[in-house]
Length: 300
Image (cartoon, rainbow, N blue to C red; front, side):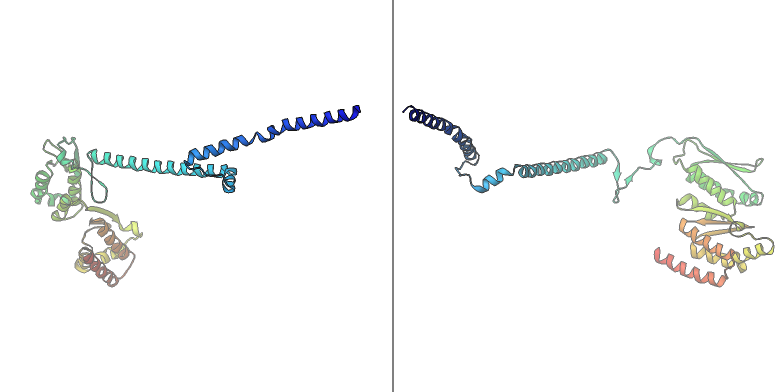
């Protein structure tokens, strides 16, 4: 009879142990209740958790990435705003710094002549060649008047050294006056007429170019004289046609050729003279000059 009682005791002990163990299994249900309370507080509406909510809760990493992307986009917008504000501030600074801009956005600076600053002292000497000494004496009045009245320079002729000297003075306002005066005198010395040389003082887009026949093609003797004859033409007809078509002035001094005019016009005249040196017939040159003159008339 002792054995059955022991068996009963063991069974009852197992039941008690099982009954004690059951609360440990049921205990994890409390955090679920806490989760429900958190959802209610966040949404302010009591909603029961569904299977979809569980699936979304199982994928927190994706939602976290989306939030990170949103944060990155906002920061990018912030940087764009910062750059636009900085660029606008710099543009405001540029406008307020005293520099004015034209329609193309390029800065416009005031003239140096009106700045009131004193021009530095400068002197230039221009040598007079022997064959231009007589024309210089004949047209001396026309030479010094534009230099003194227009450029406000001091001019003198040194007969012993055979050179013309120009320099600045207190009344000189243009810092480039000495350079303009030197260009004017050199143009007269190489053979240009005084009326054509004065244009260098009044216009800023003119300059002179000099080259020799041997720079284009090596010619000697009769070949050189025939090339110069092709450039000049009969009674200077070809040279005058080139000057009128290209709006330039040409001086032929032995094997040297001097051209006075604008940049584009000098380029066209030089190409025409080079083609004549290389042996192009004058008739073909006249045809090209007609086309060039018509284009220049349409342009201007």
